[in-house]
Length: 204
Ligand SMILES: Nc1nc2c(ncn2[C@@H]2O[C@H](COP(=O)(O)OP(=O)(O)O)[C@@H](O)[C@H]2O)c(=O)[nH]1
Ligand SMILES: [Mg+2]
Image (tube, rainbow, N blue to C red; front, side, top):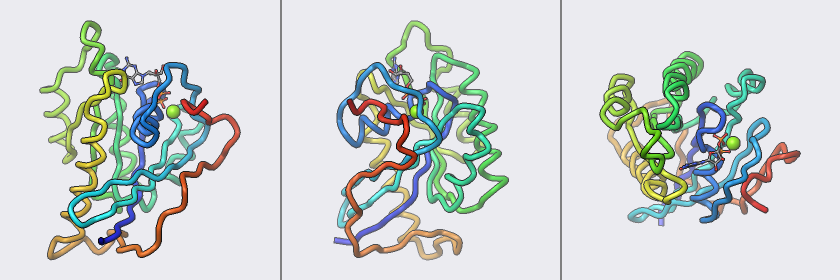
């Protein structure tokens, strides 16, 4: 078994479902009353693929403006970023470009960019359709993915797909020199969170 550890950062406007997606993947549960994430926290997500055990250190950033100045601390040295928007909220979609520009301006380590349209269960109020989002993602060299935490679609596949991409990159004949992927012999510690004050989102 090869072990691969990578840093994955979730970004996007407040309320688009970042914490819910991460919690759904890691804990398999989901509660509708989520507290706003304060600052940022991280959890470990495991993906087993081929002969790889991938440990994604997943950073969940807060979307609030007042924490925006802190976000670079989280995406620096990231291997992959997932920028989430709500398919029923055009403003959150417009923000995606700002997040991508900001990351590209401040660091060149992430090599895998995902744009994720969440809340696809909101069929009646959906305003961003697949084609528009995919076209936009292509235009900024990102992959497009759709998820719904409520109907539990696309979430397992999102993490598996990110893992598959990271394997491809680490196995490529010329992995980018700045890529911080390592074959890691140690087991990741149990899930942990920092900045513990008010971030028990979806856990109790
Ligand atoms: N309809 C719908 N609501 C969702 C979905 N994912 C999250 N939510 C709701 O959106 C709100 C914000 O979710 P949260 O995970 O806190 O967003 P964050 O601020 O991006 O971390 C919560 O009320 C969630 O219940 C989804 O797939 N569909
Ligand atoms: Mg949150």
